[in-house]
Length: 81
Ligand code: SF4
Ligand code: SF4
Image 1 (cartoon, rainbow, N blue to C red):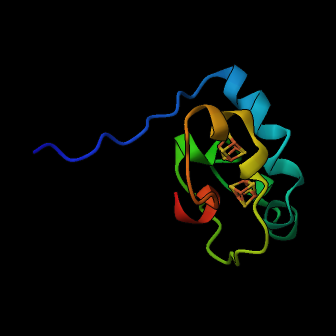
Image 2: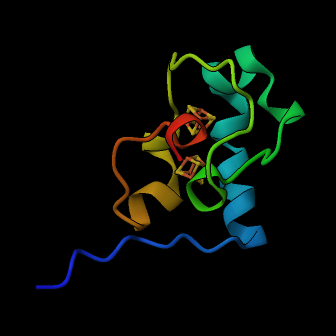
């Protein structure tokens, strides 16, 4: 039997704009200044932030249209990828 397909999130400007409404204002992002590390956004498509000193405080992904549309789970993509 084949393993379940992993959801692939497209790295588009539209998705980045949606992401900015949530990630950039979340406690994790602001506390750790994730704008200073690469990637700076759309962690669910681009993988985790290269910031190494990250605690999981609170994630705003759960209200995001990209999250809901793609049936994503768990959140904290900036720390877990
Ligand atoms: S699910 Fe999270 S990381 Fe992905 S676009 Fe939405 S807010 Fe950004
Ligand atoms: S993935 Fe979640 S915790 Fe990380 S910056 Fe985006 S909203 Fe915040």
